[in-house]
Image (tube, rainbow, N blue to C red; front, side):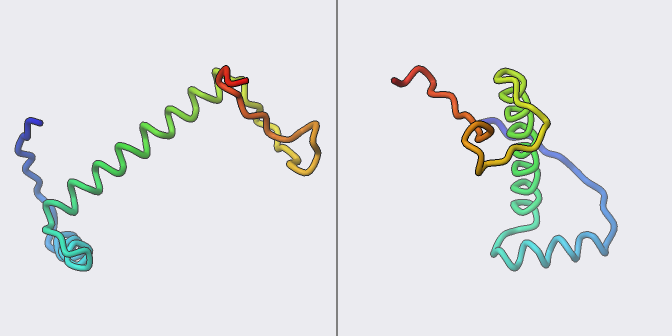
Length: 81
């Protein structure tokens, strides 16, 4: 995997907060920021995948009553009999 340098200019107060968060996790500030960005990117990609899946299966915006068998969420079998 290639890596590239990203240079940021941030204010001192933010840097101190980042140092504190990173220290609690036993990480460097650079590793903490990179992991935070990776997690945020994953969250965005996951949200998009869920939305696309709902579009594909025609998910309704109407709330479902999970106690009513006729309205319970239907799980696709993915062709498994």
